[in-house]
Image (tube, rainbow, N blue to C red):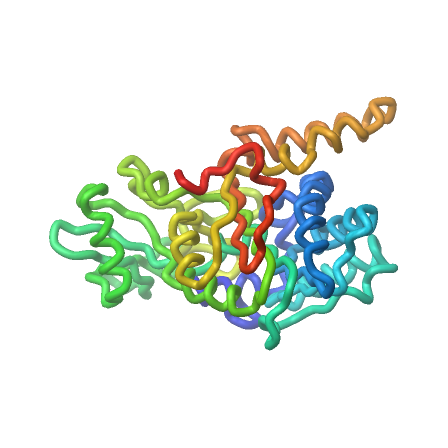
Length: 356
């Protein structure tokens, strides 16, 4: 999965393919509506105001839409950060982000700086990761009667000939990864033999590195996923690994290698555990609908002009996509992690599921 997504020049995120929007493979909340980033700005404003020298760091900024709309909204709120860092591994997405920001906020472009790695000096302010964790490589496993097997990718042999679409095949073998075996064994009392799912073993190190990059402030993670008791539910016995190609979703990562996105849902219990181990506080956890509603989505909608019929109907329909349970409202979650920041967080005042 790591090679398929990130191999320089060949991986999905490092090759020059159109990934976002109608001509791409998927669309994210900031591309759906500017209302998403406007609500986000309302959560960022009081946190930024807490620090004299404040910055925002965004992981994987996609098309740059969220950065542009967030900067515009923060400017209106008189709460611009001193700098806006974007950590982007894709050269073509970086170019797209630069084009977007130049077109939408040319007056604020001097505040934006692109990074290839986390900054050496810890920052004060906000770290944002919208649909980042789901693109981290995972290990696929199967619980056996005795032990744990793992799904490896192999080349097909004459006795196991490939389809016309791919030369690759699954090889399910006893795992050699002691960390994976140990964690899966802890799930044995609650899942049946033959259960298939996946696990993000890189998550704790990633959370630790992000924590090390923050001297004080908030980390806001927005992604689709569940708490552990829902993620590894006995009925969710085929995992959550999915692929996206030209807005079609399927579960075969062995085809279109390097041409399609590959994702897995996020175990937010694992995120919280890693955060606590990294010296962070889990200061809020809710679904996207409740977060956006608490951050003023109704007020933003009421400020729209209903006489501008086309725009009004378009934005209200976009808002429904963001908050309806059948769309993004329930599946997407928002988690706030903080360090040396003791203040209520606006997005979680209506609904906070930290103890669930």
